[in-house]
Length: 274
Image (tube, rainbow, N blue to C red; front, top):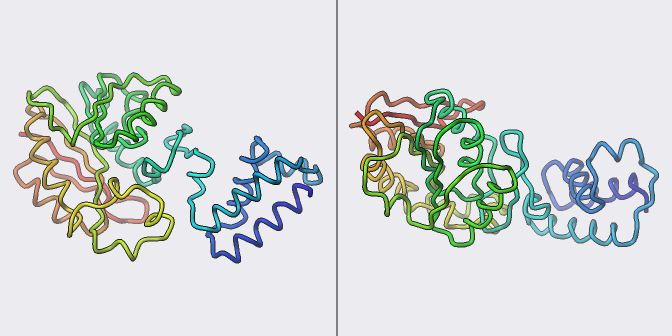
């Protein structure tokens, strides 16, 4: 089987399984199978696949057709120009979350002491540690997520301390300059409306937050108030339609701002402790 034939057949199979962007997905999976970058295909379309390569490719196609996200097959996702390792124990980083990072860097370019709450794969903490100065701490309640985040920090050369905890529970003094978080914000009742790749594969702990999707915000915002120094920054990613409700939770904070993503959806809330 040549590279050209493999890509053609893979695209057809993924199209039949209603997988979005079937050609791109076929290319990514084949590149993972033969350990190359996608541009290689255009220079070597007639190259024959070795048996082990097309066996791996076939397995990856089968997994993707069953709904397994591509990122959990390749164990990779780019975020802010860097490659991060992923497993099904952590949420897949979305491009929209880069706005959260950009907001923090814009509002507080000299970060001081920062904590990323619910770090997952560590993309926010690692990126901010590399893009700014200051001490960076990351927390997560998942004992399976933290090793992935720590591995990403190590491989990318980021200085981040990791703490296994529920939100900000162990921190009691007003020592932080920034609290940042992309918390769970999906309402439990919305589970069936999610794409199967999200519903069936991504960790529920990182997705769902009570009946209205607000339970983590309701706990995190008061905890952030407790640990932030006066003038400290709180920056949160928002779920669709939650800007007003989260802003109301932050009504005692100063300078509440909501920033839209590229689709015009209110995506990030930032405010300061008076």
